[in-house]
Amino acid sequence: MAFIKSLGYHRHMRTFKHPVPSDFILERLLYALSDPVRFEIVRYLAGVTEASCGELDGGRPKSSMSHHFRVLRDAGLVHTRNIGTTHMNSLRTQELNQRFPGLLDCILSQA
Image (cartoon, rainbow, N blue to C red):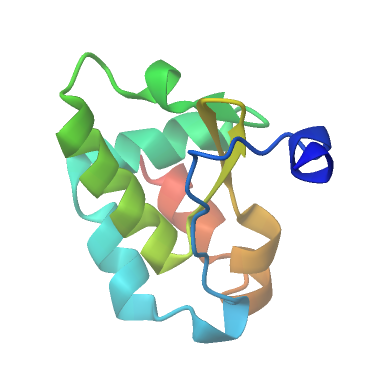
């Protein structure tokens, strides 16, 4: 248990599943970005290294935001990690560019 705590994991925090870049599907990525809330999250994350869920919720209900983050993770857009009881999110820019070169930059430049 001491080893797990030293890594910064909390026993009650779940780990998140993230697809590998070869499993990114263009239609899923575009669907995730089609929602204005999720698109705004991605735009915000494009300008920072990472942000907590609280920084990104915009006052919306936690249940609603959990859904949005799950869709973003499943599409491969966002990586979520636990730091204690805080979920930190970052944009998977490098992996996205590996799978779909230039796509994210093109989409974000149109906003």
